[in-house]
View 1 (cartoon, rainbow, N blue to C red):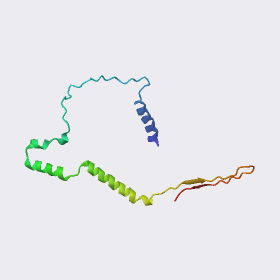
View 2 (cartoon, one colour; view 1 turned 135 degrees about the horizontal axis):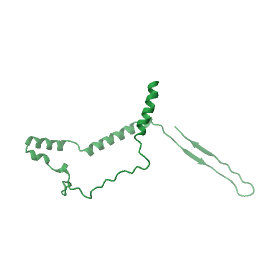
View 3 (tube, rainbow, N blue to C red; view 1 turned 180 degrees about the vertical axis):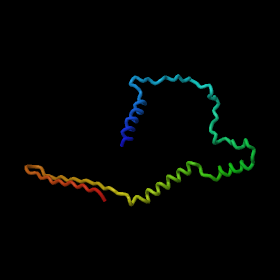
View 4 (cartoon, rainbow, N blue to C red; view 1 turned 90 degrees about the horizontal axis):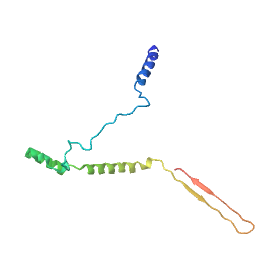
Length: 127
């Protein structure tokens, strides 16, 4: 219990030291309009360039060509995942709760001195 009595004020003092005053102004950092390191040349899409040919290795060329021809693209894989998730949702739809709501109202009457009105409202919910 004594350690708790000592630890609580110590923790409060440590946290109070992290507080900024109400008149704190963050320093302004001037940024250049243009960076000198940036290149003017656009390298384009690197996935369409044959970068592996720089190694001049026939085995590597064959492996890359085989990989490009036999592997599914990422979009095809995502579509297969989405289709499988849809199938799981449809298969489990019978175990999900359902709600059926309906309403009706009927009014009838006659013109003249006497009039009659019958009303009925039905609401059903659940299944």
